[in-house]
Image (cartoon, rainbow, N blue to C red; front, side, top):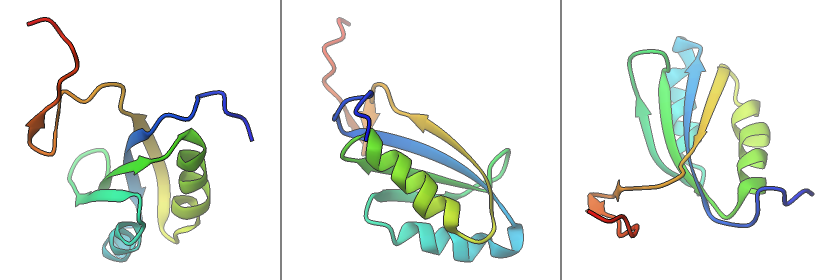
Amino acid sequence: MSSYYGNDTVTAIVQLKVDTKEADSIAIAVAKHEAIFDVFMVTGDADIVVKAKFPNYSYVKKFLVDTLGSIKGVKELKTMMVVTAFKENGKMEDIGVIR
């Protein structure tokens, strides 16, 4: 397996478009995964937004393909990788930015 992206911990925000009749059951199924920190049903371009943390990029790929991709009713995924967290869990992060 390629380690092109390295072995750093990855925080991902995933937007899911789903069959609206299946939205509740999809959200519950996603929430049960150990890498998932938050699951929100939302309005707008996505139906469900998920925040997850993974040990590295290989786990992200596996989660997207094997877990989310196999849930009945998931139509589309958009994944964003967090580059820098300025505030997380209600706390400002010390990222070394000169203020």
